Length: 592
Ligand SMILES: [Zn+2]
Image 1 (cartoon, rainbow, N blue to C red):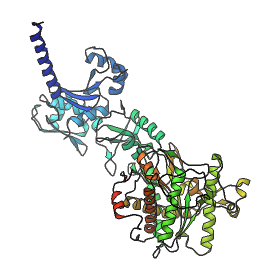
Image 2: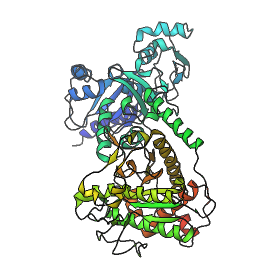
Image 3: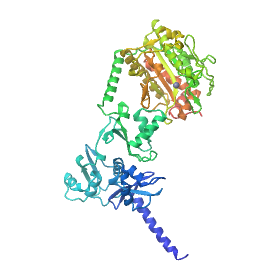
């Protein structure tokens, strides 16, 4: 035994030296990717093999071509591909995305100046002590033989470079992966194009995930299924090997057709179209503003709609379902308005068993009530009858609106609020407001069947259509109301959807539409409010709590004041200063 000991010590020493060497020249960019600079000049990316990966799959993921499998195997000394092994890939073989990532990560000080690239030699995060003009040419233009051209461009006599020496790589010599591109107005995106077409690139920051930082933010999709499908699509488009292990700074490419108009490059037809539309809306509101009320919301009529009822409980997640909980918010808002203001409230739907009183506690019962207040009333006894209820809501609203205006009320003093809670990707939170997008209600709407004919409100005016200017002004005033709601929720510390909380249509995949309750609705001022996202557990807890439901109602009340140019009076005793303070963070719940 004894003679083996020195030998073991020797092995340990050698291993320790190798480990120190590895530590010095290695930079981890993700769990399974690391950058190395060998001999102070050769840049490589190393990928840790996952179960089932081989040279072919690594070649496809890291070089973009399976044809490089053999070259990779040779580069790695023909060693067998086994899970947990690190496979070396030279910089020159990497995909454009990874090449740019490696160079940007290794040399964080480097940047564009105009279309040129500025590089500071031997000043990266790993030692590159053998870096000269040949290496710089190889890394940044893709061809070492350009070193002479680079020397000329920089007025240098010698290819030797000192630590921190600045080298300018002119645009004409710069590798395609580092070319300067146009940026979006907020600088978050860069626009480029490759063999697969035009794209916007977004570089992921620390802690950001593909689905929330890119898909939800830039494409406008919110439903879990669509968000996941798009995340997969973008991962493929951007050559992402493992969506759960994307390095910081990695460039995610979003095809332009998936972008919401405001993120498109200036001058893009879809963006121009949206800008023209926004200008048209602003003009409609400037020409014909909403007249302010003169205290206590006098003269305002709120048509308060709760979007489900009867057999239809709406969406249900995390132990909270839509109908009864949202109905309770509506009844709280009604009570606050009747206590505090001179506004009148008409409910489109009533629970004939329990009435419309705020709940005594947090938990509610699903009593399958909720009768639409048409003549005669309508209670959905089967799930299939829910769409009838949806249509009856706007018929009822239109009937109330016509009567009120006939009696002398200014049409702008009538507000239609449809309250809901929805189910979005679980990472999303809070309020989302739908306004009647002008272009989504250009047709004639109505129902002619016997099912509908038995209701007085339908018989009064079975079909509706709206002129372009009516639709434009309706969207404009409804946006104003939606902005007031967003503002008020923010002020009350209530959760808000982070991106685009106001939307002019629902988007699911390629389908876009406007909820029927807004489409056929003749009230100019109308919005559909998704109070919370029930798929998110914190949001579900908000709607599940009586105290927070009171706050949600108060948020809506504050919005009405704001919309009509009034300042909300001091808080009612039901909400103490301490409670308000406790609600300072949208993600905080002050009681379990
Ligand atoms: Zn709903």
